[in-house]
Image (cartoon, rainbow over all chains, first blue to last red):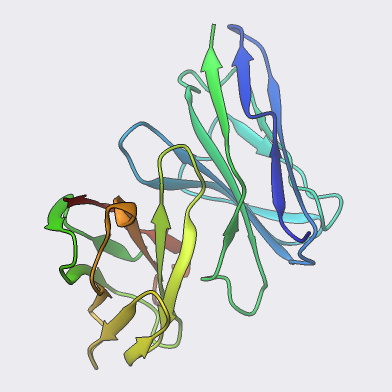
Length: 113
Length: 111
């Protein structure tokens, strides 16, 4: 089955802790994206990557970091610098040729203890 | 950045046709306009995509006027299961070519 997976489904973070959200795809897509969604709100772009070993900041990158060491994987780290991390995090992937057609994972809900 | 504007919410009854419009200024001239559907606690799902005029698939139609300053998603004969949030996605024009999702329209289909 081709698709995009995210883990864990729920994640709890303590104050001052860094946590990493996993995103994996087997669609052979070059481009991958991370979005944040707050309750009742739209999607805001955190980071995106169009090719391995390269990524760009989106609209709300502060307090987050990413890596793209493999084509299939685009993990997102929520650092302690992100003071309000509670949200629903969505990962997506697309071909480079048609980045408007994005395939989304099921999401990770991050909660602060 | 492209700014995309959608109505916050819409109500409809089962069996009716629903039209949701997205206004997008300063979008790229040569890129697609795409619409997504999202159910609670799920990732958005692709519905339809177009560049200009009209596109139709098995679930929806998309109308894009020549100036591409707006697009309208048309859902024929909606059912209760079409209750969801609908987003448009467009790419900014000029040097700011980042993709931007609209704020989303909550469609509620009533029996």
